[in-house]
Amino acid sequence: MTRHVTMLLCALGWLSGCATVSPVEHAAALEAQNKERARQLTEELYNLRKLDRIPEYIAQDFVDHSQGAPANVVGPALVRQQAEASFQQLPDLKFDILHLVADGDLVVVHWKATGTDPKNLDAAGKPKALTLDGHSLYRMREGKVVEAWDISDRLSPLLQRGYKVVPPKP
Image 1: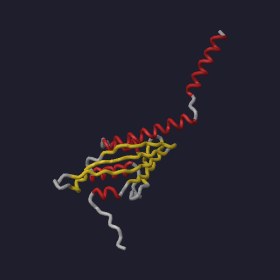
Image 2 (image 1 turned 120 degrees about the vertical axis):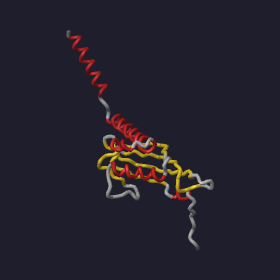
Image 3 (image 1 turned 135 degrees about the vertical axis):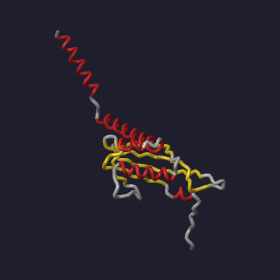
Image 4 (image 1 turned 90 degrees about the vertical axis):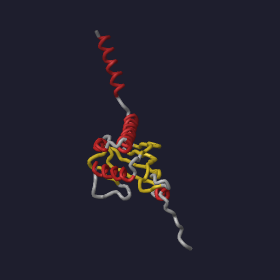
């Protein structure tokens, strides 16, 4: 009987050791989860246009710290407003994720977006293609984005639309 109890205790000890996760493993798992949530957000919201899923990815107290973001709108409503405005400007907008990097609760998404601009027509009257490059930095909490900072190349889209950079006169 003692042998069986000893074996049972050893087995339970071994199983409980398997369930223990080190702080490093926990941090790595959280970073992997955050990266996956950022990837899903980009795919479902911007590429599949599932705007009804925004509350699954964006916290109620979400704040966008990006240049030009409205200061008086927060949460999922802000993200929906921004996405709808983007789709209005580029109806076939599509994002490709080039890199995803996580550090704790922060995730950086390096992206390239393409679409056609219905207001910028070529000689045949067809909308011209437009390419955008940028990075989005998200702070995550419990699988949702709570803060964002977007940095994008603002000059390139203007040049693609035909604007010229004119140096100042000497």
